[in-house]
Image 1: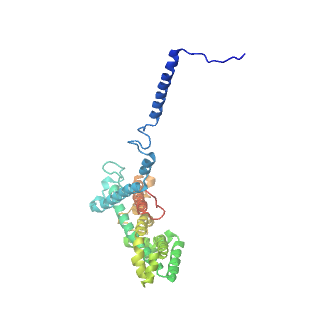
Image 2: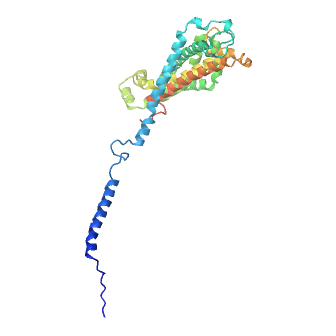
Length: 331
């Protein structure tokens, strides 16, 4: 006997409602699917969406921060220099009634053993240090530029200048600085000249390297074929490319010049004691630190550190903005 298997029959009402239920479930699933692909407010490509990578790039833009810090450095240096230069001479006169006073609102940096206001002396000393640094940095930059251009004029000149650079770099820096300051008789011109004659080798080496790199350029070869002299090529075609590196190098010489001026003045071989200088202030304050007069060295030293740091930040910011050296970073 054959047995036929038949599916159990369902009521008519139940079979009629099944497609309707399936269609309802399908619509709900389609709604869920379409809702999942709708652009959300925080989805990529949606209106009002900001890519976090782009925002982080803008926040970490090195040129933007270099411009901000460089501007702050320029403002701080200008304020220090102008304030120190515009102060009247009577602001640093002695007053025996106000001797050895601790820092107060009337005297923010206190007074010394002669009653002189240390706040006024510090500002005037910083202005003197900036003046010495300006003369020394410009002198060192000029020497480096002349020697760098001369090195590009021929192989013999390049060998001689390389030997002179190595000779100056082989001598201890502070020793040569003290010897030259002693030979020139000290004072502001002698100290500035001594610092200029000892701070050019590193910058001259950079200028020489740039000149050697530029000599292999195509337009330099074309200029030589046109019959131009080597010095004309160095001045007209190579010098414009050296201005950013030279300017950055001069700015980076500033902090070294200021610190070395304070160092040799502290040793008694720099500026005269009658001139307000940070090195003289620090040298004189050493005799009174054991008596508890800490403010005589703390505030002038801190002010000198802030000025040196401002010059360092300014040079580094300019290096980033001009794209010189190893700071070639994309925006």
